[in-house]
Image (cartoon, rainbow, N blue to C red):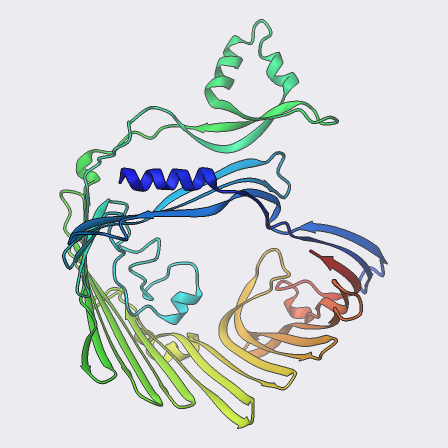
Length: 508
């Protein structure tokens, strides 16, 4: 361990300085607003993620790769140091990251990882859950979602042996760090120097005491032409620790190796268990998956089961997908409270095909139905979301059309983010020639009103651009921002004729 740390520090100190990731652009634009009848030139200077970055190159160090016995240890680490000036920041700040990436103890064929347990195993999450960033039930994601029942911060280890893995974690309100009363910090607040100095005036002793108790100085501002002062961090009160008995966490998981039943056919299983609080009962889970692959056929099936002994609630989900030659499909089933009166039973399905019609020409067709709640019976199919798309690329031409019915349709141009359960159809086409790229598209939204569909938005756009005329400069001409709205749906979006823009953009 000591040798590994020494190697790491020497490597970091010896690293050369490097200038990196300085990107941005400057552009001139001539535009005509078709709504306000305004026109004119605009100029824009924009930096991308960073204005500049001055950094020590990322370096790594390791120890233990070469060993003389069957009982040995390995350690790998990475270090990164930089000075960053982000866009709109008043001053640059320092960033330093040193991370131990591998820490294993090997005992013959056993590998013991001491950086913490592996996450819970989850094989059958719906593809809709993969698409969304927020957790929703019953499309479970036990392992990786912030609201998953198996999420925890307890420390522990994992052991691997010939493809089998076992993980264990436990913590009972213990921390290796010294406990103190220092408060955390919240949002930054700016105060002028004149205001801070005024707190020293006679009669303001209590006001000054309250100010110093609430705020702590973080960054001074002394630039010419700017009112001198400082940014202060708002202190956050320390929350009293909860009793240890309420903080106990015990977590364990295990996964088998992938067993090969026959050529191209494998099965694998896993289990999870977590207990939070001395007086609580455990939450247990199991997962299994099957896979088969042949020349033109591939089949995968996965299922997860979870039971909370505290609430007596069980949940289950299963997913199957298959592909044969040019056709593919998948189906998902999930239930959040299996067997309970309030349980939901959700089915989702999708099917697609990649149809070759000529050399280097493939038509891609997909169809999908989401959130069919079997408990709602006849109403289930009315409330489900249906999506379909078709697209192809022929030489330099790419075209795609899509439709969604019953989906949440959101107008991104509306600051209120209004949405309706309606129909959305759209199409776009792109032609990429050697010297230019042309695009055109349109989307139309419909809302169901009095058993009829009333359109509420027609959004066309078109553009052409080229980088072949002026080296390192992109010239473009486009029409965008248009949104034609029906009179009876003006609450959904704002009507606009859009604008026509011609621009020259230099990027670096």
